[in-house]
Amino acid sequence: MSNLSKITKVLSFLGLLGSLPLLAEPLNQFQVIGSHNSYKQVMPSSALTYVMAHDPKLAKAIDYSHPPLKQQLNLGIRHFEIDLLLDPTIGMYAHPKLEKTLNQPLLSESERDLLKQPGLKVLHIPDVDVKSHCNMFKECLSQLLSWSEAHPNHFPFIILINVKETSVGFIKGQQPFTFHSKDYAQIDNEIRQVVPKEKLFTPDKLRGNYSTLEKAVLTQGWPELAELRGKFLFLFDGNPRQKSLYAAEHASLKGRAMFASFAPGQAESAFLIINDPIDKFAEIHSVVKQGYMVRTRSDANLSATNLQRASRKEAAFNSGAQVISSDFYQGSIQAQEAGYSVVFNTNHFIRPNPIFHAFSSRLNN
Image 1: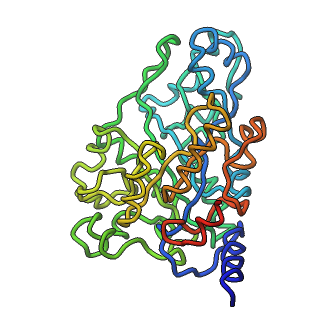
Image 2: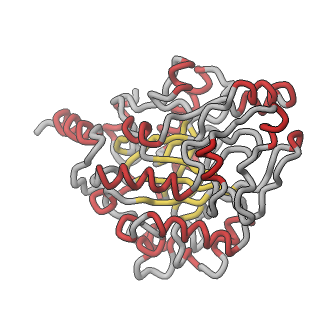
Image 3: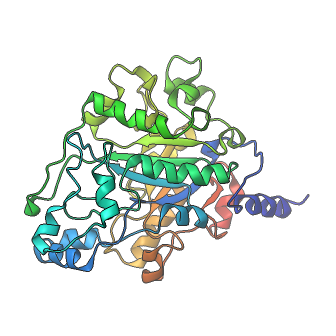
Protein backbone atom coordinates (compact mmCIF):
# COMPACT_ATOMS: atom_id res chain seq x y z
CA MET A 1 0.00 0.00 0.00
CA SER A 2 1.38 3.44 -0.92
CA ASN A 3 2.02 6.11 1.72
CA LEU A 4 -0.84 8.18 0.28
CA SER A 5 -3.19 5.21 0.57
CA LYS A 6 -2.14 4.65 4.16
CA ILE A 7 -2.74 8.30 5.01
CA THR A 8 -6.14 8.29 3.34
CA LYS A 9 -7.13 5.11 5.17
CA VAL A 10 -6.12 6.46 8.60
CA LEU A 11 -7.87 9.78 8.07
CA SER A 12 -10.97 8.01 6.84
CA PHE A 13 -11.03 5.97 10.03
CA LEU A 14 -10.58 9.07 12.15
CA GLY A 15 -13.61 10.66 10.53
CA LEU A 16 -16.02 8.00 11.75
CA LEU A 17 -18.29 9.31 14.49
CA GLY A 18 -19.30 5.95 15.89
CA SER A 19 -16.10 3.93 15.93
CA LEU A 20 -12.36 3.97 15.43
CA PRO A 21 -10.04 1.18 14.36
CA LEU A 22 -7.81 -0.77 16.69
CA LEU A 23 -4.94 1.62 16.13
CA ALA A 24 -1.72 0.80 17.92
CA GLU A 25 -0.72 4.42 18.54
CA PRO A 26 -1.02 5.68 22.15
CA LEU A 27 -3.51 8.38 23.07
CA ASN A 28 -0.89 11.13 23.25
CA GLN A 29 -0.10 10.65 19.56
CA PHE A 30 -3.43 12.14 18.50
CA GLN A 31 -4.94 15.61 18.56
CA VAL A 32 -8.59 16.35 19.29
CA ILE A 33 -10.57 19.60 19.01
CA GLY A 34 -13.26 20.29 21.60
CA SER A 35 -15.59 22.94 22.98
CA HIS A 36 -15.00 25.57 25.68
CA ASN A 37 -17.67 25.82 28.41
CA SER A 38 -19.52 23.14 26.49
CA TYR A 39 -22.76 23.34 28.51
CA LYS A 40 -23.41 27.06 27.87
CA GLN A 41 -26.64 28.26 26.29
CA VAL A 42 -27.15 31.70 24.79
CA MET A 43 -28.00 34.45 27.26
CA PRO A 44 -31.48 36.03 26.98
CA SER A 45 -31.12 39.32 25.13
CA SER A 46 -32.48 41.33 28.06
CA ALA A 47 -29.87 39.85 30.40
CA LEU A 48 -27.05 40.50 27.96
CA THR A 49 -28.23 44.10 27.44
CA TYR A 50 -28.23 44.66 31.21
CA VAL A 51 -24.69 43.31 31.57
CA MET A 52 -23.55 45.41 28.60
CA ALA A 53 -24.77 48.56 30.36
CA HIS A 54 -22.80 47.74 33.52
CA ASP A 55 -19.73 45.92 32.19
CA PRO A 56 -19.31 46.02 28.39
CA LYS A 57 -16.09 43.99 28.50
CA LEU A 58 -17.77 41.19 30.43
CA ALA A 59 -20.79 41.26 28.11
CA LYS A 60 -18.59 40.78 25.04
CA ALA A 61 -16.69 37.96 26.77
CA ILE A 62 -19.80 35.93 27.58
CA ASP A 63 -21.78 36.48 24.38
CA TYR A 64 -21.37 32.94 22.99
CA SER A 65 -23.11 29.60 23.27
CA HIS A 66 -22.99 25.96 22.19
CA PRO A 67 -25.54 23.45 20.93
CA PRO A 68 -26.69 20.63 23.24
CA LEU A 69 -24.06 18.04 24.14
CA LYS A 70 -25.67 15.37 21.95
CA GLN A 71 -25.49 17.68 18.95
CA GLN A 72 -21.83 18.43 19.66
CA LEU A 73 -21.15 14.70 19.90
CA ASN A 74 -22.83 14.12 16.56
CA LEU A 75 -20.63 16.81 15.03
CA GLY A 76 -17.58 14.87 16.23
CA ILE A 77 -16.61 16.79 19.39
CA ARG A 78 -14.90 14.57 21.98
CA HIS A 79 -13.45 17.15 24.39
CA PHE A 80 -15.75 19.07 26.74
CA GLU A 81 -15.44 21.62 29.55
CA ILE A 82 -17.80 21.77 32.52
CA ASP A 83 -17.93 24.35 35.35
CA LEU A 84 -19.13 23.24 38.79
CA LEU A 85 -20.61 25.11 41.75
CA LEU A 86 -21.31 23.84 45.25
CA ASP A 87 -24.88 24.03 46.49
CA PRO A 88 -24.81 22.77 50.10
CA THR A 89 -28.01 24.63 51.02
CA ILE A 90 -29.79 23.12 47.95
CA GLY A 91 -31.53 25.51 45.59
CA MET A 92 -29.29 28.54 46.05
CA TYR A 93 -29.06 29.01 42.25
CA ALA A 94 -32.73 28.40 41.49
CA HIS A 95 -33.65 32.11 41.61
CA PRO A 96 -30.98 34.21 39.83
CA LYS A 97 -30.68 37.78 41.09
CA LEU A 98 -30.97 39.13 37.56
CA GLU A 99 -34.50 37.72 37.32
CA LYS A 100 -35.61 40.04 40.10
CA THR A 101 -33.69 42.98 38.63
CA LEU A 102 -35.26 42.53 35.19
CA ASN A 103 -38.61 41.38 36.57
CA GLN A 104 -38.69 38.45 34.15
CA PRO A 105 -37.79 34.76 34.34
CA LEU A 106 -34.44 33.58 32.99
CA LEU A 107 -35.03 29.91 33.82
CA SER A 108 -37.83 27.56 32.83
CA GLU A 109 -39.70 25.83 35.63
CA SER A 110 -38.08 22.50 34.75
CA GLU A 111 -34.65 24.12 35.01
CA ARG A 112 -35.63 25.69 38.32
CA ASP A 113 -36.81 22.32 39.64
CA LEU A 114 -33.49 20.72 38.73
CA LEU A 115 -31.58 23.49 40.47
CA LYS A 116 -33.56 22.77 43.64
CA GLN A 117 -32.19 19.24 43.77
CA PRO A 118 -29.07 18.30 45.75
CA GLY A 119 -25.82 17.97 43.84
CA LEU A 120 -23.17 19.94 41.99
CA LYS A 121 -24.61 22.63 39.73
CA VAL A 122 -23.44 23.65 36.25
CA LEU A 123 -23.64 27.25 35.07
CA HIS A 124 -21.30 29.95 33.84
CA ILE A 125 -21.78 32.94 36.16
CA PRO A 126 -24.14 32.82 39.17
CA ASP A 127 -27.12 35.20 38.97
CA VAL A 128 -26.05 36.41 35.50
CA ASP A 129 -25.17 33.79 32.87
CA VAL A 130 -27.21 30.84 34.08
CA LYS A 131 -28.62 29.02 31.05
CA SER A 132 -27.12 25.52 30.71
CA HIS A 133 -27.89 22.50 28.57
CA CYS A 134 -27.50 20.47 31.77
CA ASN A 135 -28.05 22.22 35.09
CA MET A 136 -26.69 19.34 37.19
CA PHE A 137 -23.24 17.77 36.87
CA LYS A 138 -24.75 14.29 36.93
CA GLU A 139 -27.17 15.34 34.21
CA CYS A 140 -24.26 16.40 31.96
CA LEU A 141 -22.52 13.10 32.62
CA SER A 142 -25.69 11.14 31.96
CA GLN A 143 -26.11 12.83 28.58
CA LEU A 144 -22.54 11.95 27.64
CA LEU A 145 -22.90 8.41 28.94
CA SER A 146 -26.11 7.80 27.00
CA TRP A 147 -24.38 8.75 23.74
CA SER A 148 -21.29 6.76 24.69
CA GLU A 149 -23.28 3.59 25.30
CA ALA A 150 -24.93 3.96 21.90
CA HIS A 151 -21.51 4.47 20.24
CA PRO A 152 -19.20 2.25 22.32
CA ASN A 153 -16.13 2.52 20.05
CA HIS A 154 -15.81 6.30 20.17
CA PHE A 155 -12.57 8.23 20.68
CA PRO A 156 -12.28 8.71 24.47
CA PHE A 157 -14.08 11.69 25.98
CA ILE A 158 -11.64 14.12 27.61
CA ILE A 159 -13.61 16.27 30.05
CA LEU A 160 -12.09 19.35 31.66
CA ILE A 161 -13.52 20.32 35.07
CA ASN A 162 -13.41 23.81 36.61
CA VAL A 163 -14.81 24.84 39.97
CA LYS A 164 -16.45 28.25 40.35
CA GLU A 165 -15.80 30.19 43.55
CA THR A 166 -16.43 33.83 42.53
CA SER A 167 -19.35 36.00 41.40
CA VAL A 168 -19.90 39.26 39.52
CA GLY A 169 -19.69 42.25 41.87
CA PHE A 170 -22.24 44.61 40.34
CA ILE A 171 -25.05 42.02 40.63
CA LYS A 172 -24.63 41.55 44.40
CA GLY A 173 -26.14 38.09 44.25
CA GLN A 174 -25.09 34.69 45.57
CA GLN A 175 -21.48 34.32 46.66
CA PRO A 176 -20.42 30.81 45.62
CA PHE A 177 -19.07 28.49 48.29
CA THR A 178 -15.38 27.66 48.34
CA PHE A 179 -14.47 24.05 47.63
CA HIS A 180 -12.75 22.12 50.42
CA SER A 181 -11.36 18.59 50.59
CA LYS A 182 -14.75 16.96 51.15
CA ASP A 183 -16.16 18.87 48.19
CA TYR A 184 -13.53 17.50 45.84
CA ALA A 185 -14.50 14.07 47.07
CA GLN A 186 -18.05 14.93 46.01
CA ILE A 187 -16.87 15.64 42.45
CA ASP A 188 -15.19 12.23 42.33
CA ASN A 189 -18.25 10.56 43.84
CA GLU A 190 -20.66 12.10 41.33
CA ILE A 191 -18.41 11.01 38.47
CA ARG A 192 -18.35 7.44 39.78
CA GLN A 193 -22.08 7.43 40.44
CA VAL A 194 -22.74 8.02 36.73
CA VAL A 195 -19.76 6.71 34.77
CA PRO A 196 -19.33 2.91 35.09
CA LYS A 197 -16.00 1.78 36.47
CA GLU A 198 -15.05 0.03 33.25
CA LYS A 199 -15.56 3.25 31.26
CA LEU A 200 -13.58 5.53 33.58
CA PHE A 201 -9.85 5.90 32.93
CA THR A 202 -8.28 7.16 36.17
CA PRO A 203 -4.79 8.14 37.36
CA ASP A 204 -4.59 4.77 39.16
CA LYS A 205 -5.08 2.92 35.88
CA LEU A 206 -2.33 4.92 34.21
CA ARG A 207 0.07 4.65 37.15
CA GLY A 208 -0.22 0.87 37.47
CA ASN A 209 2.72 -0.48 39.46
CA TYR A 210 4.90 2.60 39.05
CA SER A 211 5.71 4.67 42.13
CA THR A 212 4.33 7.91 40.69
CA LEU A 213 2.03 9.03 37.92
CA GLU A 214 4.79 11.00 36.29
CA LYS A 215 7.15 8.03 36.26
CA ALA A 216 4.48 5.94 34.56
CA VAL A 217 3.99 8.55 31.85
CA LEU A 218 7.69 9.05 31.20
CA THR A 219 8.50 5.32 31.32
CA GLN A 220 5.62 3.38 29.81
CA GLY A 221 3.61 6.22 28.30
CA TRP A 222 -0.11 6.44 27.61
CA PRO A 223 -2.24 3.45 26.66
CA GLU A 224 -2.99 2.71 23.04
CA LEU A 225 -6.09 4.25 21.58
CA ALA A 226 -7.65 0.80 21.15
CA GLU A 227 -7.59 0.34 24.93
CA LEU A 228 -9.29 3.68 25.59
CA ARG A 229 -12.09 3.64 23.05
CA GLY A 230 -15.45 4.30 24.69
CA LYS A 231 -13.89 5.61 27.90
CA PHE A 232 -14.05 8.86 29.91
CA LEU A 233 -10.96 10.76 31.08
CA PHE A 234 -11.38 13.75 33.44
CA LEU A 235 -8.88 16.58 33.89
CA PHE A 236 -9.14 19.05 36.78
CA ASP A 237 -8.21 22.65 35.97
CA GLY A 238 -7.59 24.53 39.19
CA ASN A 239 -5.44 27.23 40.76
CA PRO A 240 -2.55 26.13 43.01
CA ARG A 241 -4.70 26.07 46.17
CA GLN A 242 -7.44 24.05 44.49
CA LYS A 243 -5.00 21.52 43.02
CA SER A 244 -3.21 21.21 46.34
CA LEU A 245 -6.50 20.34 48.03
CA TYR A 246 -7.35 17.83 45.33
CA ALA A 247 -4.02 16.05 45.73
CA ALA A 248 -3.91 16.28 49.55
CA GLU A 249 -3.82 12.78 51.07
CA HIS A 250 -3.90 11.42 47.50
CA ALA A 251 -0.21 11.35 46.58
CA SER A 252 0.24 10.89 42.83
CA LEU A 253 -3.59 11.26 42.67
CA LYS A 254 -4.06 7.80 44.15
CA GLY A 255 -7.76 7.00 44.39
CA ARG A 256 -8.84 10.13 42.51
CA ALA A 257 -11.24 10.10 39.56
CA MET A 258 -9.55 12.98 37.74
CA PHE A 259 -6.12 13.84 36.46
CA ALA A 260 -4.97 17.36 37.38
CA SER A 261 -2.55 19.83 35.84
CA PHE A 262 0.74 19.65 37.73
CA ALA A 263 4.06 20.89 36.35
CA PRO A 264 6.75 18.41 35.27
CA GLY A 265 8.83 17.23 38.17
CA GLN A 266 5.86 16.57 40.43
CA ALA A 267 4.57 13.10 41.21
CA GLU A 268 1.09 14.02 39.95
CA SER A 269 2.27 15.35 36.58
CA ALA A 270 0.87 13.62 33.49
CA PHE A 271 -1.63 15.95 31.81
CA LEU A 272 -0.83 19.68 31.67
CA ILE A 273 -2.99 22.72 30.95
CA ILE A 274 -1.02 25.35 29.01
CA ASN A 275 -3.60 27.67 27.52
CA ASP A 276 -1.48 30.06 25.44
CA PRO A 277 -0.04 28.21 22.43
CA ILE A 278 1.72 31.30 21.08
CA ASP A 279 3.74 32.50 24.08
CA LYS A 280 4.12 28.93 25.39
CA PHE A 281 4.69 27.22 22.04
CA ALA A 282 8.19 25.96 22.86
CA GLU A 283 7.11 24.74 26.30
CA ILE A 284 4.15 22.81 24.90
CA HIS A 285 6.30 21.29 22.16
CA SER A 286 8.91 20.21 24.70
CA VAL A 287 6.61 18.53 27.20
CA VAL A 288 4.62 16.78 24.46
CA LYS A 289 7.86 15.31 23.11
CA GLN A 290 8.65 14.06 26.61
CA GLY A 291 5.37 12.13 26.82
CA TYR A 292 3.01 14.43 28.73
CA MET A 293 -0.40 15.34 27.38
CA VAL A 294 -1.35 19.01 27.05
CA ARG A 295 -4.60 20.91 26.74
CA THR A 296 -4.45 24.35 25.12
CA ARG A 297 -6.90 26.89 23.64
CA SER A 298 -7.02 27.82 19.95
CA ASP A 299 -8.98 30.97 20.81
CA ALA A 300 -9.66 32.87 24.02
CA ASN A 301 -10.81 36.33 22.94
CA LEU A 302 -14.16 36.74 21.24
CA SER A 303 -13.12 40.24 20.12
CA ALA A 304 -10.09 38.98 18.18
CA THR A 305 -10.04 39.28 14.40
CA ASN A 306 -10.20 36.16 12.25
CA LEU A 307 -6.56 36.73 11.33
CA GLN A 308 -5.59 36.77 15.01
CA ARG A 309 -7.68 33.67 15.64
CA ALA A 310 -6.06 31.85 12.74
CA SER A 311 -2.57 32.67 14.03
CA ARG A 312 -3.38 31.25 17.45
CA LYS A 313 -5.09 28.22 15.94
CA GLU A 314 -2.04 27.35 13.84
CA ALA A 315 0.17 27.69 16.91
CA ALA A 316 -2.11 25.34 18.84
CA PHE A 317 -2.18 22.80 16.01
CA ASN A 318 1.58 22.86 15.41
CA SER A 319 2.56 22.90 19.09
CA GLY A 320 1.56 19.25 19.40
CA ALA A 321 -0.90 19.91 22.23
CA GLN A 322 -3.19 16.91 22.18
CA VAL A 323 -6.39 18.63 23.34
CA ILE A 324 -7.42 21.91 21.71
CA SER A 325 -10.39 23.82 23.09
CA SER A 326 -12.38 26.28 20.97
CA ASP A 327 -15.54 28.37 20.79
CA PHE A 328 -15.23 28.39 16.99
CA TYR A 329 -15.11 24.67 16.16
CA GLN A 330 -16.68 23.90 12.78
CA GLY A 331 -20.47 23.80 13.16
CA SER A 332 -20.61 26.07 16.20
CA ILE A 333 -22.76 29.20 16.29
CA GLN A 334 -19.67 31.41 16.67
CA ALA A 335 -18.02 29.82 13.61
CA GLN A 336 -21.11 30.41 11.50
CA GLU A 337 -21.40 34.04 12.59
CA ALA A 338 -17.69 34.83 12.17
CA GLY A 339 -17.17 32.96 8.91
CA TYR A 340 -14.21 31.27 10.55
CA SER A 341 -13.84 27.80 12.03
CA VAL A 342 -11.42 25.59 13.92
CA VAL A 343 -11.11 22.20 12.24
CA PHE A 344 -8.29 20.12 10.82
CA ASN A 345 -7.78 20.33 7.06
CA THR A 346 -9.38 16.92 6.73
CA ASN A 347 -12.66 18.44 8.03
CA HIS A 348 -12.42 16.31 11.16
CA PHE A 349 -11.88 17.03 14.85
CA ILE A 350 -9.35 14.23 15.39
CA ARG A 351 -6.05 13.62 13.64
CA PRO A 352 -2.63 12.03 14.21
CA ASN A 353 -0.38 14.39 16.18
CA PRO A 354 2.15 16.18 13.91
CA ILE A 355 4.81 15.86 16.61
CA PHE A 356 4.78 12.10 16.10
CA HIS A 357 3.39 11.74 12.56
CA ALA A 358 5.26 13.70 9.89
CA PHE A 359 2.53 13.34 7.27
CA SER A 360 -0.01 14.99 9.58
CA SER A 361 1.92 18.25 9.70
CA ARG A 362 2.17 18.29 5.89
CA LEU A 363 -1.60 18.04 5.67
CA ASN A 364 -1.85 21.28 7.60
CA ASN A 365 0.19 23.31 5.09
